[in-house]
Length: 336
Image 1: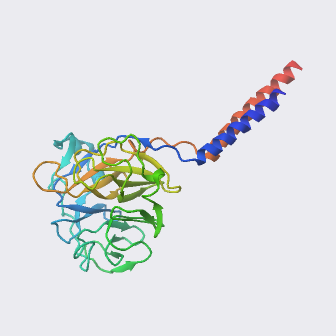
Image 2 (image 1 turned 60 degrees about the horizontal axis):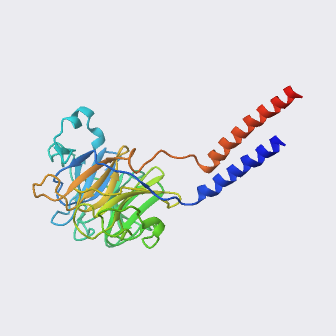
Image 3 (image 1 turned 90 degrees about the horizontal axis):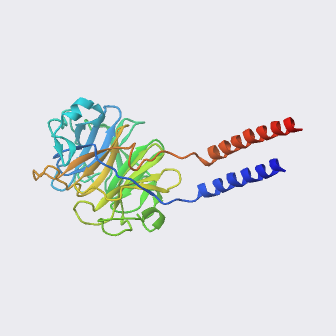
């Protein structure tokens, strides 16, 4: 009888665990604090990490030019070098010289950009399978070789028109129109009319609770980081960074107060260790040059420790049951 009751209870726990795991939970609020900032990258808009050349490419908007520029990846700075940097609002800050701005070179893609010529107002990505930069534009996404802009081609079935976010990650090709839905290979992934994906509880100081849409997007493993636009204002706390599950579209986490320094986050990039956010109209050091790049660690804040998958949880519970069952049988034999 005891064994039967134990079996029934264990099966019930496993069943409940399986059902509850399929329901979307409330997103986790977690402070996403910058670990670095690149200062005075003029009107920075698009971002991409080049896995071949180990460099960050960025495009400009507003009064910027039509060239794709470069800075050294934050992952390439030693702990001692970062510790020696001056602090701006408590964040280690890289000047253009310390960032090695354009030391690696620039790229003039020609043609039309997101708004104007070349790469002006164009979100950027990098296709590791081809070793090419990709950028958004009015006629679709196009690819070309870094630095030379050679071998240009149009990449179909991603998206077209003005966009704030672009990311190529294996088979997933992410496209985020200007404050619109997020698309993966042309199919809607996050819908700004879906409250389960846009409503951010406990919101403070960031305009409406319901996101107007998204700008930058960047896949990191099974997570998709995105910039949620809460207000059309160009001021601190008008936007914040959120995290989705790539496979389910579930909103997993969000920064509950954005960043009071950044004015207008746009595109995102990831260098294998750090996440980058382009602040088009921010001026972190107060020198009057708008456009900074913020750096975040993806291991904290919006990235809590993963919970076991349903199948893993079921196996664990089944293992506990077998251990208890074995102990019960042995006890009955001793008493019998």
